[in-house]
Image (cartoon, rainbow, N blue to C red; front, side, top):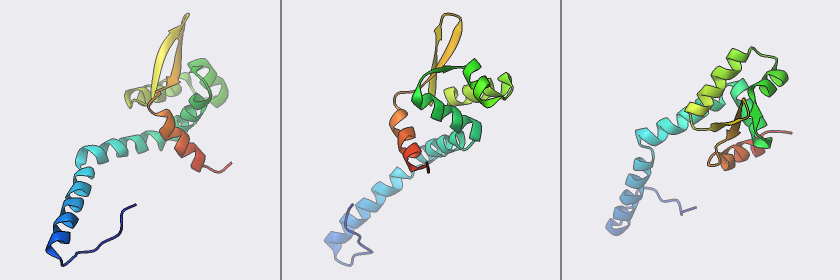
Length: 119
């Protein structure tokens, strides 16, 4: 972590300070904040979070989610679609069954979130 500075009076330091703040301001741009907000919204729904946690263990089909959650298949499918559209999961076919799996790019992020949960 960088050393904390606050409004330096020295002109040379002030230029560096302003450059750092401009860089941080760019990082907080609308696109990056919107992307993170969408991820948080997706994971904020209890059923979607449970689906994600199951997919960290292994790939699953809808009938397995239905068996575990005892929720209507349409509700499970709706939430799977939201997760897929959000880029968190992917799907493929095995025989006649559609199988869902974690997007490999998202696994480290979800594992980090999981490690912060109690138990």
